[in-house]
Length: 117
Image (cartoon, rainbow, N blue to C red; front, side):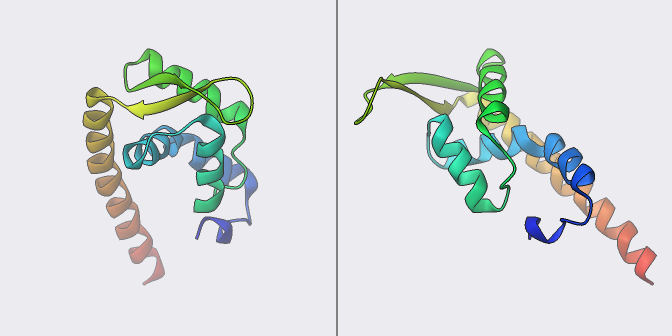
């Protein structure tokens, strides 16, 4: 679905910036992961333009806010890597963001439905 909104790349980037924290928390709530894995999951979901330079600073910020925690795990190839997981506070924030998102998108959908009439 996301790839279908390719007509305005700047608009797409603005929309992504507004939801990226929530999307990362949602992905980590499903299963802890390292940064590279999160980039792959974002690509698989259709957010192909999200790179490491975006993901890692957000993970650092989420960690500083206490929404995710990280631990070092042995890598089968190379140095240990940080694996991130959602904290209890992160789950609470995610649930609040999801409620807010559902309300927001419902309002936007209502307005767009009126505009199509």
